[in-house]
Length: 114
Length: 113
Image (tube, rainbow over all chains, first blue to last red; front, side):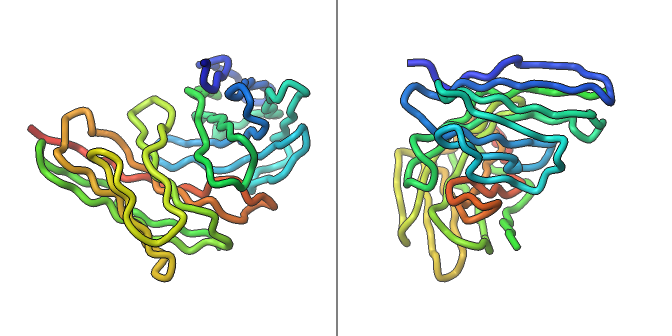
């Protein structure tokens, strides 16, 4: 059974460009969350989606947006990239939000903005 | 506000026992998680506590005291492969969500021969 899969694994973009990151949750999981992890820090919550609706949003600017599709996969979009957006972007899936179950993480997308 | 504190770095010897502490102050509490993260890789789940007390899973144990806002991860019989960052995370009410995780900065553990 496949775990959480993210694509691409690595990406290099120029300042001002936009980027789309993709995530497929574990089969049967309906909740997807996105996290940003800057080098040397813990992951920071960006978005949570459940049943295609946004259920939570962290302290990130409007340049960050996301959506969830009917098959529960998700996209994270970042516009007008800044150097500070360089980070590991992690997707986590769980059965439903708020339940006493662990979140499973994908391998992440390493974004470098130059 | 949300605040999770854990030591930045720790060093221990192969075969020994190490305890990694975590204190937290969060709005809402729906469980505390410990994750292991090797450099350049995704976090992998180690343990989950929602009630006070000790949870044991092989060489790893995790303890929670909700009244003190305190948890620790205990690693026994340390192996070289245990060298990694250990992340303490609280599932709390943040950003309008009850399901997301609030992470500490992580504790980088180095196991020496």
